[in-house]
Image (cartoon, rainbow, N blue to C red; front, side):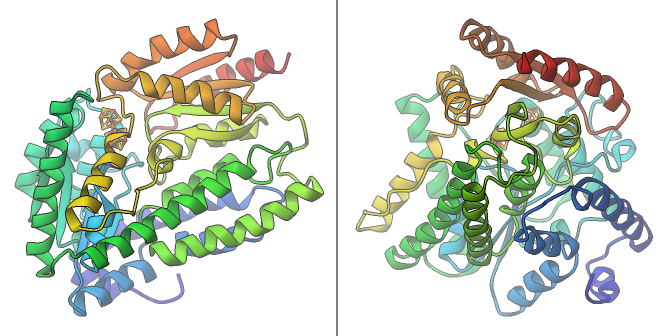
Length: 426
Ligand code: BJ8
């Protein structure tokens, strides 16, 4: 880290000793997983820097912005519309929920058979080690899976200004009405909190900012169709993770700049792995920072990950908001249309996700699909059966992996993935 931020962390009320240990483990892990990769694009230096300052400079930026009267809103899900937060000049941060941290504490509040992502939210909150949770003016939960919605009842007793957005379970007209009403309510809440009004002008601007960010990610993904892929799945996952908390305009510029470099690599046929390395599509639960376990195993074999059908990936970024509306209501309706398309497994039925996996497999020339689930995640585990069946019927090999954030099953998973990669390479 470029500066000593101890005073800042102390003022946020962090447990300094535990925080120091956490940063140490994170730093070690990052070096081992990311910096040891061969032939990385130069443009990854920006993202390495952002990661090195994840609890430093970025937090300072948030606190400086708050001093200038801007609000900071934290969230855990791609259903929380960033555009509405940006419209009032707020800052949106997606919180990391990808580490096995403080699970003993979390299990004092949650059943043991809760998914690791939810336990991670509680572990960080109870351990006082997350400067983001301690910096936000409001934290937003969403009624998605049963685990999250019940856990949020408890989190609301631990966190000031915790707001819960309700979500429908079906993609019906009635479902969309509920969705629209919730977005309307959320917009009001954001206006109250910031004491600013959402106008046609600021909403259109924020839609443009977020669309540009998604466009840059789309460009990045399209370059991975090449063989050899010019960037590893690990690095792309990292970029997708940083998507949630970096400044959106700066992030978009950095992604476009790495894409310029990757375009040259594609022409020169420079890849991170040799041509004809087996290509894997990952589908399933989101992988939040610092959950790098499965991609690390896959690419150590080596096979290359060429796409992520995930909320930290294409599911979360693929659709754009139509900005042609002329009023706040029309623009808000366009936002509703866009977010209502997210095919999270909490919806029943959810056929578009399956179609999307098939389409991505084709588009990215994937040799096989690795379906990734967190243990105890019923929505994605339940969907994995029909996904496996349909993909196999289409002669697309599938491997289903259910795991958590621990490293205990790494050896066993590696053996299974090795066998799978051998199968898809034949
Ligand atoms: S839109 S995927 S980010 S809810 S892993 S907590 S589903 S038991 S994270 Fe998600 Fe929004 Fe959907 Fe995307 Fe529950 Fe499953 Fe745990 Fe999960």
